[in-house]
Image (spheres, rainbow, N blue to C red):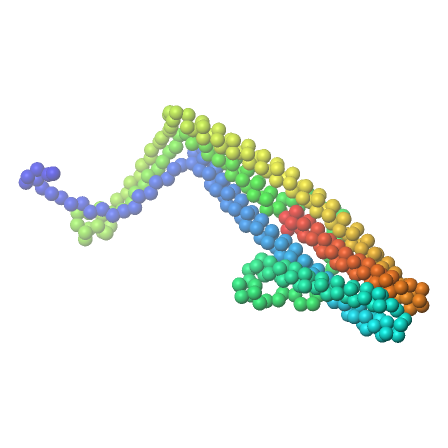
Length: 347
């Protein structure tokens, strides 16, 4: 407290204070580089999610189209079988064929009819999954229909004769691993230079006066500038421990990068192998369908001439339907292999 009778004065001040650290050794620049690398790694995580969702949408859509093709194939076969059943009933009434052969055809038709509900159920489940992936509303998921009929998928473009390995650098997981490694390397330097001398600048600018009316006059303007230096002399080994920890994280980042690179090459190789196998399978299944169509035509001709039985015709029809169904599945596998290759190359 001021002594009794001592004069009392009041000083009013207003101003701003700012302090800066001079980055003499690049420590702050390294910290900034690490932060930017972390940000790019986060962007790579987002790109990875987008690539996964896009691949899954394509996969589910192809599955939906394949199921539509299977349903169309089954229904077309049913129409043919029902027409044949009407003819065979008349032949059975006339005593041309036995009741046993007629019941065989009826059993084949019942078997085809029993397969339709399962195809419908698979289609509904696939469509629901696709609607969720597309971000549709709950109401849309419940009532919408994405594909009706059997739309023609565009033909697949051929692959180039060579694929440069630089394409892998687009993969989000490799970008993420690379940026994590860059961040870890930068943080090693940040930890190593943490105890080096630092120079801080403090600056102030403002006004000062005894009365409020003088506070914002030109004569009241004041400023200050100062510098200070600091250096850590003894920290019980904390700085060395932090540096060792940063180096360990860097080594882990190197291992993660090498593992991600090996995984990328493995996935590309597997996708290329699956692509080749899918092409060969689809080509073979197409030849199988053509052969079974000829077998069915001959079986019907032989049956009409009384050389073969109705069972031979049914076997030929069953084999043709199985071949066509296998061709649809092979085409789906071929397109899924291309999606895997697209994903393995980073989109």
